[in-house]
Length: 314
Image (cartoon, rainbow, N blue to C red):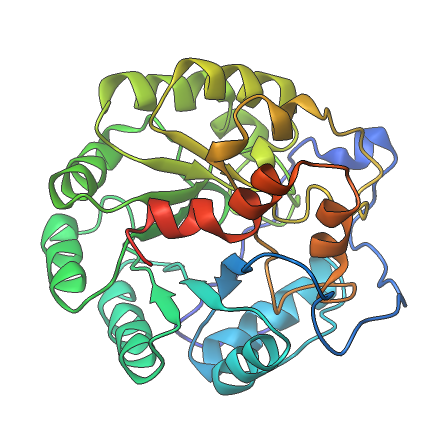
């Protein structure tokens, strides 16, 4: 695989992955049916985990996924990502991106800030590469441009959640009252990441962050996969932790999901999808949540109200 200059070639690695449970990468696509719109009768739906990148970066990400992750069903650039979801009944989109190397963050943040200004239903987040020069200043600029939080990815950016270079990022978010979405769970992972996610990521490391930065609002995607029970216990103990459902309830990975992860503090759970980087139907996750027998109040919170509260939106 040859990536464009702004996305470095991932190092071949070694990591123990879900393969040990019979899950091999790349995984197959699912030819499941998709609906033209969200099911009627649902409360307001906010997709709190949608990726937006400039075209060239999107295409590099898709090449990597096709080779090492799963086939991308929706290879849509930013304008089509937004029109696709909004026309199908999603009311708001939280736009995430991440810098693959130092020096990318300012351009990516400017891109998402412009998208958010043009479409007020987009809640745009910033990114930074942990440890890069001027990281706190990059985030201050991004918040001034209207971005509502920060996205980091431990696997792609090759850092542990409790690494020293993260403290200035956590402090900047806390000072500004901006949430941080951080892929700090061990899965989904790939041996093609430039690190061993199982060596870097653990619920215990995230607990150190929660304890040392009590005013930081931290959201861990994928319900903390694959440490579902450990993250449910953290959710019980820490008021500054949130989880999102992304790819964890869709039944794509043949891994048992403890219902406790969804029900221990449902007011701290956000609906998210990873759209457009999906191997299955865009509405698979929301249908799964709607079929779980959650109360009306819990479903309303998970599908949208909790995300709006986290990001201070109405």
